[in-house]
Length: 113
Length: 109
Image (cartoon, rainbow over all chains, first blue to last red):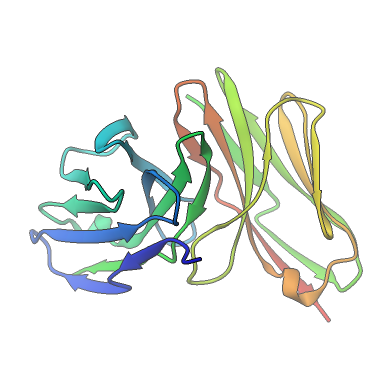
């Protein structure tokens, strides 16, 4: 049973560029959440998608947007990248009936130069 | 604002030396409190969910407990493979998740 997968594993961008990160949830899961984890910090909640709709959103600017597809996979888009966007971006999936119990992917390490 | 504070930031134990990690929190309404383990360069691994004060959960050498203001992760007779960062997170009644900054545990053989 494949767990949560994310791509790419690493990415280097320059300030002002745009980036798209991808996530495939664990089999049987229909809810996807995205987190930003800066070095030495805990993950910060960006948003959660369920049934292709954004269900909850944390305290992140509109430069951060997302999408969920009918197969439950998800994308995180970040526009106008800033140096401070450098972080590990984590995707977590869960089942609609127990959506608060989340299983994390390995993350995408984004470096903005 | 809801907040999670973990202590200590780092902990070094000898193999077999039991100890506890602390997670204190302030929240308007608690839906659940979660413990995760995170190895370097990897995503967090789910350990436990606690929903109400007095609840306890156990898994191998780990035991998590919850009070109205704190949660503890007790590690009994730890082994070197228990070395990792342990993260605490809460889910409030507004369905927002808040993570602490973690406790980095090193178990020395």
